[in-house]
Image 1 (cartoon, protein in one colour):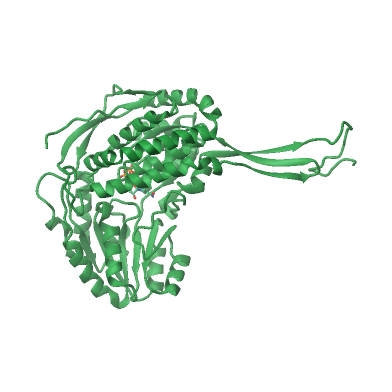
Image 2 (image 1 turned 180 degrees about the horizontal axis):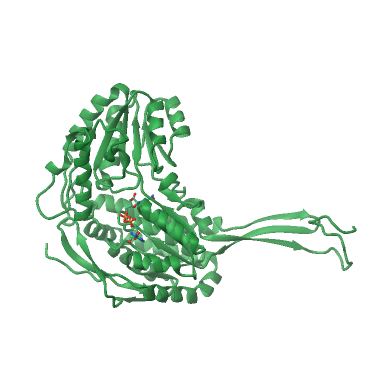
Length: 502
Ligand code: NAD
């Protein structure tokens, strides 16, 4: 396929413009290794322009009734549904997911818009009449002002949609900084939001790296920052944003454990593991990374998993082909994944399936499904996030051992158990050291209506993304106390403090 150069504009104050910058970065098609676009690396000046546009738009947007803001989301949803295939193709082009995976991720993003369509119900306040004599007390929710979102490469459409449909419908203005590796999907979806009628300045997109992010974190007029990405950057964003007076929610990396009990249905468990570890080429924060086989299920599990994984097709996703698995995001990331396979071998693990031996020819960034057996948590591959199609297997004697292994993990995103036992499932869901639990389900990523509750170093902040917590993050409450006197007499009694003469 010939190299195509795609435009990579910013959206500032309702205008799509390609800002003049000294620095740009190449955007690759991971299926071929070709450069398909250049993204400008915005400077603090560009961020300032976006913030000014958002600040100017905020007073009118805040006053727009919540139901009218939601109406724009209804139109946005229709446009997303109509253009879902087109968006999915853009995702396959710049990210490398298979078309089916890309389409599914667009659907998960649309669910966030559907959640936002219903937000007026959640934005209602509370009132208690006559809390004290003739005194009513109420709480109402207000938007924060200008909010920003900084997103990772692995879900180019879905993760940005975790943020701004909710932020905007709550009455905030928003600045999105997508990953510089996958800006095209965010731009395409931004065009649809403009078409849906979002007023100019309410929603803005800037592109860039650390310089741009730092300008966001230091800007005094940005009230809140949502971040999704790796743990070291999440920690940095949380600390720096908070030090500059911002509300921050920062979701980080993961090392998700999948426990397979001796009583599990082996076929179902293997299918669940395969989907979890190799779906989206392992580039999911909820991907299974360490399978923990309990007792005598280990040998049949490794055998069956290796056999099934070896049958998976790996190939280009940009040309209409439908392989089981596509490439990973970049050459650099591919090299990093391969060092984990090397380290596993040198630290004494077995590698019954080495994905380097099954990769397709060409310049794409491919590595096939990889199974690493007899991993221990002190091995690099057993404790660090690989973020590629590498599934490690540890062998333990009991569920208690598996739960203890989870306690030693610094992350705490997802964890899964495959079992037929209610007792084991209950023990697991109550005691495992992770915030999102799956029972006989490989990827327990919550849907829009529930929060994405990572624990430990998988999340910094207190209000998570998605669900009611997402709405709470983007609003501040005001509490109002009202006293209406019964007549015109002066009453020296304070009915709340209960002081003064009655
Ligand atoms: P990343 O941390 O490298 O980048 C994320 C964002 O931060 C990008 O927009 C990037 O431009 C910016 N950034 C990168 N380095 C920065 C720095 N030093 N200072 C300021 N900003 C910086 O993450 P990635 O490689 O794009 O995405 C993969 C990671 O995201 C994985 O660790 C994955 O687990 C995680 N992730 C987590 C969740 C979750 O919900 N917990 C969801 C998706 C992805």
